[in-house]
Figure 1 (cartoon, helix red, strand yellow):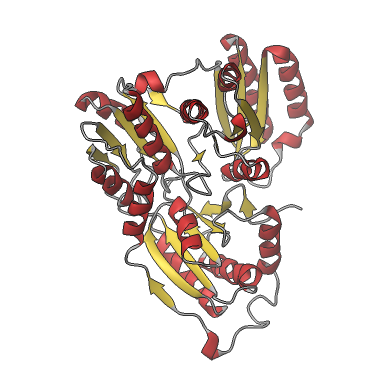
Figure 2: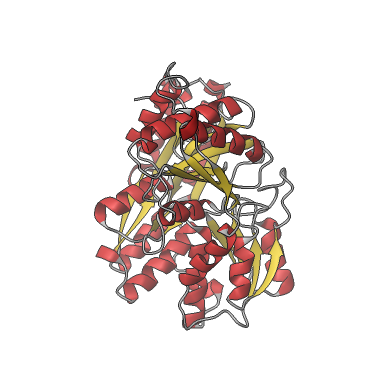
Length: 451
């Protein structure tokens, strides 16, 4: 079934334009309440947000929709996406909502939905919600009477609760005294929580990206723009740099030399450490089709299996739940540790890395350089919404030629982004010149077809 609103990570778009309007947010809330709240006896929803200007508008619209359906609303204010997953479960809520477009610029926004178990909603439930959004009876049929309209309240201790939750994932007998950390919160949702956690664990913390103004989230900072962090780590002689994205569900690290460390190297360290201590369930790590071939080869030498899924941490989580695995993630920095949470959590992943560095007495450049990545090239091509360049014959021919060129020496992945109007073209292989040529040829054809 083709989905009109939901992509790979909730609903996302440009703020104040469909589908990120107050009108649609209101309908999303009412539709979600009908689908998820109707089986409940306590009727509660927790709503969090990042620091985008448009979050005020969407927060109020969502609140009105849930209240109109008889659900009580608890508002947390700015808080990381993983925190909403945790609070939804701990507060016995029916639904958790995070208003965020993650790593996108401030002009965009999104709505992520979590079930009572703290997991992102399954495709089937999202389809049921979509059916109600466009149902003419959504705003008229079966509305509760006036005495059953919901109440809204603000949760004053949300940040404190999440600070304690994060610290609880860190080994009790360890601390970070003497470790200098540069922390970049992307002017986003973790700007209060993350600094408090690291400071209370005794680290010396140099802060970046903690002055949100509604328009500077992810702007030349955070996990998608690490250049300033890399320079700062070297400048102050820090042991490590930590970059979160706008909603803190992904993590990129910087070693003491200023080198950028992606999610694949983080998974390599965590997977190896967990297997060594007998903690890696079924000796298996789940990643996506975007993870580097070098990671797969490295894990093979360590007796660890790598299972791949479609792109999106929700698909990683689904595979982890199916196989009862406890570590998964993406090259982009989502790291899912099911022993601690139900979704990608940049802060918790960072804490686990810091714990390993402290336990082993290693520098970040030593611990986070476990394999040599196979040469990989990724290019993004923007296209007009509604057009379908990947269905054109010229593009199909170019893809077939590219795959034949790489043959057994590499692989090609071409896909449409689930969150932006982009075609992502990735190739990797042992011959860097061939990889670059393949990507360039495919991109040229797609660009021409896409106009």
